[in-house]
Length: 452
Image (tube, rainbow, N blue to C red):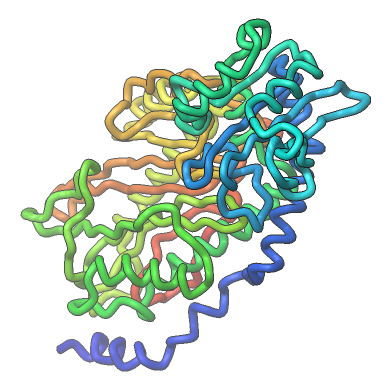
């Protein structure tokens, strides 16, 4: 066995704590709860009124039963409510700029500090009748409910609850019912200044967990499998008292002509990781009700190598260039399909073989907002791709550039990247930087997630 490789194995057991120290401070559960409630109150005071007025909606009803929660209600419950209770009805009524929002819970209890209970079963046993009376008293112009053909995020009103609502309303009120789709998407996609600041911590935690997983702390070439790394990611998330919204993937590209690239429509097969492998992961966390979605690359050095091969450095440059092309077309009012078409055209002009499949992130990993391509829809995405781009929104800039590597027998490598970006002040800003240097195993240089 090569002496350098033996030395590498020996070092493995002396560096266990080398990478863990860079994880940012993660709040205790109690402190998270306090912060989540603060953020929610801020959103109701500073964000929701303007969203409702923009859409001309003066009443929004969110209705859910325990364990069949509307996706919207999950974002409005206080931190200590993990689910709705029995039937929970939230009524949000805009009384105008002077008086602001009135937030009522047609439920037995207050729902946190925002929604005050407006139902006493001893006085009116029928919950639907009480809701109808509250609506009639306020006489709104429009009543938005969570039904949507396009977005699952805003289609959370179940069939039986919809029937119960409609049957309880007067004909006059029934005629005021409209879809909350645009309001709901606006609520879900819009990030407040504090949430934008917090996203930097989320993204840094995600990057550091990946850096640990793609390091000699975890990977012993010839021994460790891709599934070992997947489960390290899951265990590390659990150890940090975090959650993940999807099961990670780790896959391998290598010079072997019999080794084909991972097809997107199924999970990658398990591989033993070997020197000379180009590793790729897809991984995200959930923290403070927000989500990340990141893909990065690592290379396993051969015993005779002391740095990343130049051909892989150039391949990553192609991926970064594709990122720049796509984010350069971000402009308020542009649809995802327009950004996709312009980006692919420019990429082709620049000699890149590109695929783009970017999406919003926020309360959900695949969040509400405009979709910029899907891996199997490079000609545009019906519905979601026609939604216009808004500022103060977060995205997973997800794509790949295919690069032929002469040193690998002209085999095509997919430079698959995904990083979190905030669209603010007319520009995309990578929240914790982006990968501009492929990680090496063992690590020779400091990790870089630099700038824009």
